[in-house]
Structures are given as C-alpha cells and as structure tokens.
Amino acid sequence: MLKIGLTGGIGSGKSVVARLFATLGIPITDADTRAKWLMTHDAALRAALVTEFGPEIFDPVTGQLDRAGLARRAFADPLVLQRLNALVHPAVGRDFAAWLTVQERAGAPYIVKEAAILFEADIARMLDYVITVAAPEDVRIQRVLARDPHRTPADVAAIISKQLPEEERLKRADFILWNDDKQPLLPQVLALDEEIRRRCDGPKPPIAA
Image 1 (tube, rainbow, N blue to C red):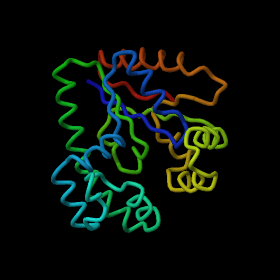
Image 2 (image 1 turned 30 degrees about the horizontal axis):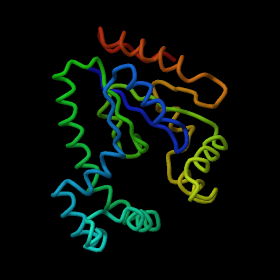
Image 3 (image 1 turned 45 degrees about the horizontal axis):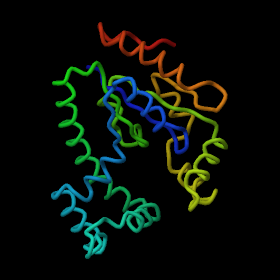
Image 4 (image 1 turned 120 degrees about the vertical axis):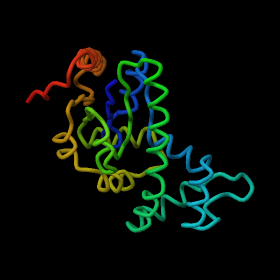
C-alpha cells in the first residue's frame, strides 16, 4: 500500500483535492485536523502542553484549547513554535501509524496524508510520493480572504512568509496538481489516481523528469 503525501501553500486548494480523492474511495487523513483533535483529547499530549505553556491555554469551563492564543504566541516567537511542534508532531506521528495499520488491514490500494507543513515537519520522508497543489500567490490570497473574512491581506502574507517557498515545494514534489482556476482540477486528479493505482501493482518506478 503506497503512502501519498498531499501538500500546498495556504489557499492552494489541497483540501479540495483531498475531497476528490475521498470520492474515489481513497482513505484520507488530515494532519492539521488530527493535531487539533489530539491537543484536546490525547491525555498525554494535553498534560505536556499544560506543563510547557501553562494551564491557561485550556478554558477552565469548557476544557477547550485556546488555539488562537497559543497560535499568537507561537507565531510571535520561533522558540515557542519549536517547543510546540516538538510536542505535537510525535503525537500526530503515533496517531498516523495507528490509522495506517487500520487502512492496511482494510486493503486500501493507497492512502493520502494531507499536511500543510509536510516538508517543513519532515513528514515526507515517511511517504512514497508527494503531491503538491499549486496556484499563483495572488489567487491563493484572494481565496483565503474570501474564505476567512476575519483575516487581512497582511495576515495571509505573514502565513505565506512562514511556509516553504512555492518554488521549493514544487521542486520537492513528485506530482503537481495545478489549481490556478485555468486548468480543470478533476481531470488531473483522475489521471493521477490512475497513475498511482498503476504504481501500486508493481515496484516503485523512478519519477519521470
């Protein structure tokens, strides 16, 4: 069973691509969503977060994580972000390994792991291939502003500046899906699904230039 990574900069449309693969019967896991769930529900991770950042990061009434407050601290201080990642990433890795075992037993031809920081968090080395969803930066910014009205262009630009440069992401990818509002996305996904299923049937061939 091949393990496929799916990544892309903010506003690229990687979640749309993930949903298209899901309609084709491919198991999907979203590292970002799982991380948010684990930070509240994984007892060991929750305790580690309290020890590291203080009990105030969880609401005393609802018990929910103050994600916005923690995000502000992490984005303002690279050391805080590094400490946070050092706690969260191993938990997400364990969660992925358990999920992967279930999918292998179910006989899935391949799985897709969606992650915004797939390269930055060194997740790619655990996968067979990586798909990058690409779109021009101005298109991505407009999509995010339309999707998240609470964000400003400066907010989006700050997020982009902290992500891997698009050129580097494209260079590291095995497959690229263009979601630039010019090339239809669905035919690209269907063709890629066919290619990955073909590769599932034999030895992993070299990536075409």
